[in-house]
Image (cartoon, rainbow, N blue to C red; front, side, top):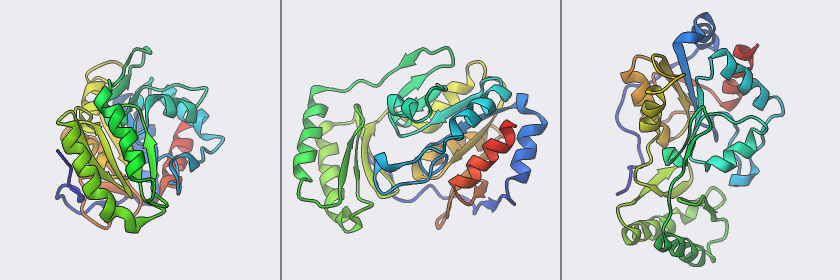
Length: 265
């Protein structure tokens, strides 16, 4: 199974005039809302390489303060592995859906982690070997997922795509080929950001609240659909050349950080 390069058809989003309207919504009745945040490209600026992202010094504490104002109803929903995300925002630990939802940590600290297989571990080794001559292509081992980043070598996409499709066919229906911003990723097929949001919203402290989903990439479209269906807010971050399920936009990750900082005060 593979996901399309373009997001599902939707209406053109309207721009958020600054962060004013969203900030007012959150601040006026925080007990009514739950906040679901992607990390790369949403909370943090994208980097040339996966490990090159920079976490502003004030962001972890601002996220913690925002979480407390929301009664704990703040979750990270990311393609990163759970453990890696924890390192980014240490010493704080938030509810999280990692690997696009294949890994979950509940507010009480309980975790559910994705399982890998011997065949998938072998495939990751073969992927590294097959791309060893692809200068600028970086392979990111996420445990139960593996990503091929070509931001430094965009011309390699034509080589990577058939290779990743072939590997997905070999590993079987348990893994899906996901396309994103300058990345091709094999992730567990049961991983879905929208399903993760629904799962959190079925449990305290998220239950009974309206979701606010903020993300920047194709994988976040599933979150946007859930937020829209539940009467919440969906926000796409960054330039949106194609249509999106999101109802609103913010210009860049810096605007998301500013929103969090202002709300956290």
